Image (cartoon, rainbow, N blue to C red; front, side, top):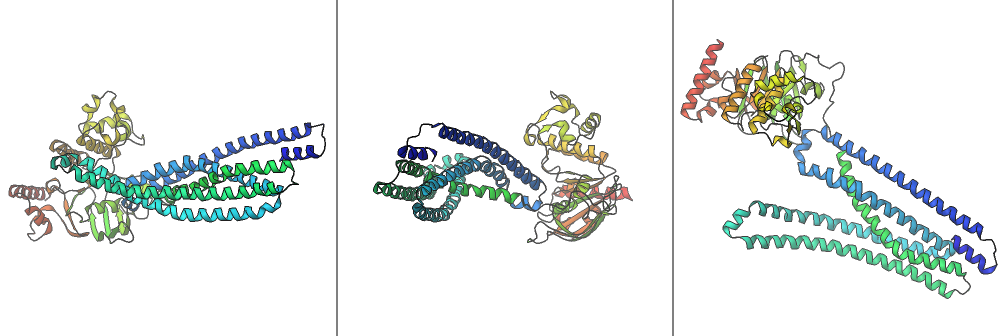
Length: 554
């Protein structure tokens, strides 16, 4: 506009001093550069801060979420939020948004310039903008539906490829390559149809934007061609700005629609910032247990019921039993009987009703950190972290190395760790892949020894190990945890036949709870029925073992 004004002035009067115009133009250019730098710094600062905040909030809420969330969301779905959605939000969306904002501002400036030169152009400008937003709204509602369909039909294609690769030897053995190829082509055709429809709708959207831009510019040029008394500066300004409008308006509308499509990722990220979490991690001052709690290890279940989701039935139904301090309890039952749910109730991993009292403290009302750090568990699948052996044994760096070596010696791993290149600093791979299953399980047992908690829980701890490792685990439990309360969940009855009592579960209810020998005397009992299904020689061995233990107690 500055150049246009100068041309109009020089067209009607001779101006000697052009310095004032150059100074104004240079001032505008310098201001534009300064504002561009300020805009860039502000944009980078805000986007990085918002991205960090959203990621940290997502991660924190995920760590504090209940088991119900993990039961209903697969690891792939969670990783998708932290990978693809965050990538779209961090990189794609900001760039699209900046480009869209800049182009919209440029287009707005162009339209304002054209309308300032001739106010009559306000009317076609409003009409064109109205039509553009109507077409954009129609395009979004159509294209989003097509993209959802494309996502749905893409899954069978990926699933078919994965299944084919996994079963390739079988496919070649039976010679059904052609059948699998035809199935793949059908899935590919279906996906390509939806994808091509999305591209077609996008092209149609671009065509209508280009058409409206062309009509607007044509009206502008024809108007000034028919107007003889117009200033040459105004005519040149309007025509040049109109030509710029043809290129920028369609591009800006495309980026604006892409921004709205990317906002789906933001919506999915925000969903994870509102995940329902567990109850308070720290106890209230008046409910916080003492540092020495639990000093004995007595456990009492009073009418305890548990379910993993509010809309699901209870998997534990009114459990009532008492575990005396230092007792060794074996928990058995059919699959789905509720054995592992007792562990979930003790660690408060799901919604529970009733009271669970440990050494006089109701664990359903204290903080989760105060509860869980006071119990040790050795699961069926050993949990090993990526890091050193030292970090796996003592994640919070609370104990000196001599205690760690002592625990390794107790589980017969000291010599093995000594032979490693860096000893306790040896790096353990992801999921402990550079250790055997037995070594990983023994490492978990050593971790429990170091903690010296009064309550130890074994959840099928010896189900996946060899007999030698099984013997080491059983011997270590008898010696190192003799002064602890031990709850053992097992399918193999021979591993819990030497317990003080056997707790038999069925359909979430406690059906039997007594000494093994007493339960074996009940010929119509559930536990006795489970034993009778074993080999005859094993049944006799179990009966003799239970009888000897009872006589020893008496």
